[in-house]
Length: 235
Image (cartoon, rainbow, N blue to C red; front, side, top):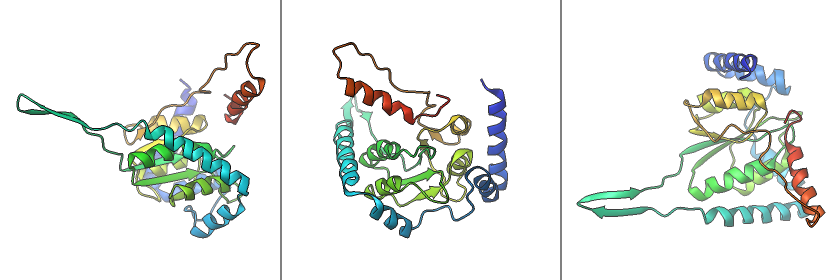
C-alpha cells in the first residue's frame, strides 16, 4: 500500500466533498490548466465530427459494429419459474446512470467504445463521460465516438477531481457506478469512493501476456505488443 498516495488522494476527495465545485475548479486549473465551462457544447461536438477523416470514421464504425455484435450475445434472458407455489429466478435490470472515465494523457476512444457499447445494449439510460482536456479541448475522436453512441454528456474533467465529481454529484448528477482506467491517482480515487458509488475494477498495469513461438505471425505479435504502449510509463 502506498500510504503517501492514499493520504494525498483522500485529502483531495475530502476537499472536493466539502468545497464542491470551487475545489473541482481549483484542481482543474492546477492539473489540467483549464478554467472554463466543464460540459462540452453541441458546437464542439459538431466541430469534432467534421474533423475526423473518412477512413478513420469507417474504422471506428466497424469497431463499434464488432463490439455491438459481441456484447449482444452476452445478454441474459430472464429465467423465472414457479415451484411449490413460489416464484424463483433471475431478473436483469440495467444500472440507471453510469460515469465513464476516459484517460487523457494518451486519449483512448477505445475506452469509451468498450464501456459504452455494452452499457447501451444493457439499456443504461444516462451516461456521463469525463476526460482531461488538452489546451482546453477534448480529443475529437472521443467526441466522435460519443456522438455516434448518442452520448451528449461529456465533461472536460480529469484526475481525482473527475472521480470526485462523478461520485459526489458535483457539477453533474451523481452516477451510480464508475467505469474506465486511469493513472495511479485515478485508480486510488476509485478505490476510495467505492461504497459511495460502484466501480468496475482497480486496473493493473496491463491486461495481456503475449505467448508466441517461431510460427507466429510477426505482425500480429507486434500489434498485440503495441496495444499495451497506451498504458502509462510507470506500468
